[in-house]
Amino acid sequence: MQTDPVAQLEQLFLQACSLGDPCARYASFITIDEDGLPASRIVTLLSLDAAGIAVSVNAASPKIRQWQANGKWELAGFWPAQMVQYRLRGQAMLEQNEQLRRDWQAKRRASRLADRYHQRIRQQSSPLPSRAALLAEMAQLEREPDAVSDAPPGIALLRLQIDMLELWTGSLADRLHDRRLYRKVADGWSETVLVP
Image 1 (cartoon, rainbow, N blue to C red):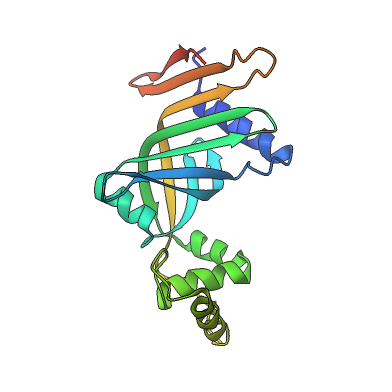
Image 2 (image 1 turned 135 degrees about the vertical axis):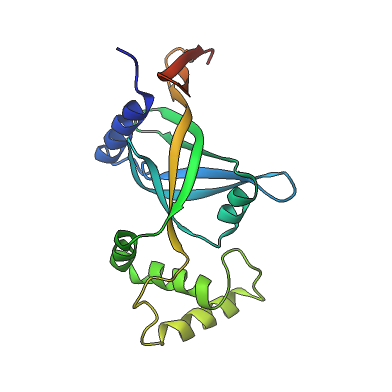
């Protein structure tokens, strides 16, 4: 039977979550900026299953603008509880739906306020005159009665569908790690064992 690397990654993700691995739901999302340089930031994985990986994003954020400009991205993560490292590439799409908006209402108030701030006051990653300016603007926003009543229009789900997956399982005893590269092909997946 042919290996399904996405199912394998899903099982490793579920194990990392059940082991309480503090890195289980976080990964580095890498894009290419307008100068052709890599830009990396940590994102939160909402889900990882056969449909791919879902990440909640601000559709106007730099990472989304960079991805939309050139279509290039990579996701990389490490689950130290199992000594598993992964990186993946593939297709990506933005989704907006009612479930996402309901999930937004369940987020902590501080997170919802930050999302609203990005929409109403300053875009994510834009320059600030000072930290004090940020705190004052957030305090003013928090006093508004409808500040977190509805999800901002820019809230979206970035769904990453995997075409290439590299899985690395560490072997600290001899450093002969198990490293495999999977690529999607017409009838499933190709598998290549790599030198660690």
